[in-house]
Image (tube, rainbow, N blue to C red; front, side):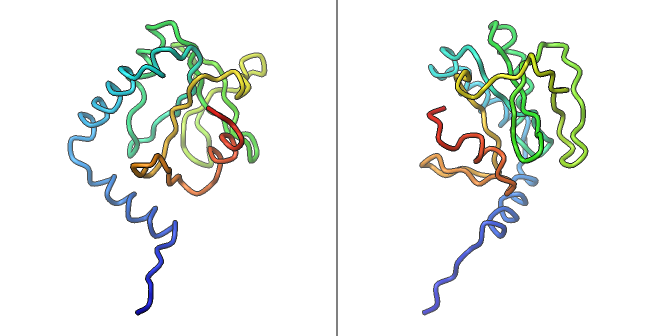
Length: 152
């Protein structure tokens, strides 16, 4: 019997379709965000790197706003070449649209760049996650490269 292997791209397509068809997405995003806010790691973290969510992703806006209210330092990613860098933002930060991916990101002022060793927690996007915490991303490797060789 021939073993069928599913490629990462096939899995991405399958789970993208599933995500696009999730009903009550807003309600489910709120549940996920509430669980994160109740987590001890989140509560103790001072410097938190978020992602600026796309419509098909878990909405991070509420969690970002709650973090500002809790006086946490909020970071958003900016793609610079093949690298993902995180910059501190404030509640009224003007974001720009990355032309390649359509995601909102900070302007990237060097004095607001935070190195990964100083980040307490990274909220990572993904197409899907398994029960062991493995992540299937969008296939460009930005978060994989950023998180490589780190204990974040």
